Amino acid sequence: MDDATINKVVNGYVRDHLSPKPEQRAYIAEKYGELKGFLGGVCFRSGSYPRYTAIDPVHDLDVIYPVTDVTVRDNPSALVNQLLAQLQEQYKNSPTKIKRIYTQTHSVTIELADSPEGDFSIDVVPAIELSAKNDYGQALYSVPEILRLNHHNRQRRYENAAERPIGWIKSDPRGYIKAASDLNDANGDFRHAAKLIKGWRHACKMAYKDDFKLKSFHIEQTVRLYFEANPDCSTVEAVTACLEALPDYLENAQIPDRADNDRLIDEYVDDLTDTERNLILRLQTEALAIVRQLPASSDEDDVVDKLETLTTVTKPRPVVTTPATRAVTPRQPWAR
Image 1 (cartoon, helix red, strand yellow):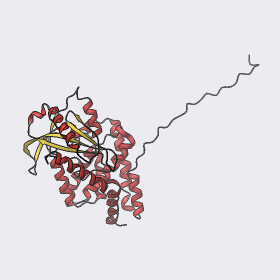
Image 2 (cartoon, helix red, strand yellow):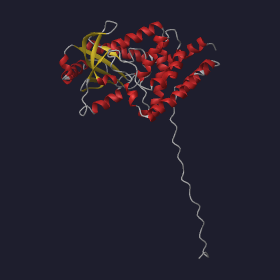
Image 3 (cartoon, rainbow, N blue to C red):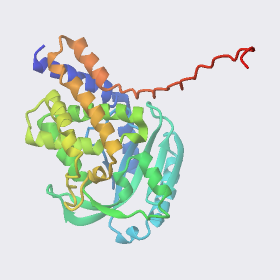
Image 4 (cartoon, rainbow, N blue to C red):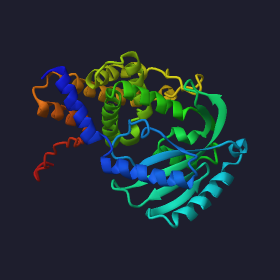
């Protein structure tokens, strides 16, 4: 097989096995459209889904609700409670099936009951629109720091908010969406490469749970940097190069945030223990060995087998050793 054919098979695998299904995309578009109507059109989606780098299944969606009242920073609960009452009333007459709508201190969560892919929720997060603009001329925002966390870690952060109050950070969600959109328009292999490495990362996360610390957004940004430097590269080339570069990205935090060059999006790297870093590196080494075999694939089935191996990670069971028993010589009745 030539490289172009192998890359086409890889992209097809990503589309069919790692990308959100058409029925789920239609569902999310419908539910977001309804919510946007409830909010008077004053909102936008944030995160990997609008960047076209989310993998299947999509369990949650962040929706940013911009406001100009800076007092929200000191008392977000007032706006959040008002938003809760508004949405509860509007969903009463909606055909959408709702499990529950509830507040956290900085957001309103809508848990839906009719998703084709199981559990699905939408977090509506108020954000303060700032006068500052990004390099695309779009507004920057002051957002609750929880927006940087996935939904699992977000809940944990809420639980210890009494000890360490949740702060606000400057963010550029529209800029990240625009940058990803431009890369996708120039070369659709950007989203394929991001999804494939995220698919590997998800498999590692499922196997090792919280012991595997590599963050999805961190991976995506390493892929973005590679495509910006190599705009004509293929999915296979990018995935191979990004996995090769991963050890360097784990040495220290180094990727500036779009909204604030003094803050790094990969700052968690500096807090990794040797055990946590070594686990990522061991699994990265195994993944890289698989990806490097792709150019030598003999046929489509061979490519798919390699991709299945890449995105299937099993945690070895601990070896249980049985303590050696000491041989005991029976005492003979005549031995006195």
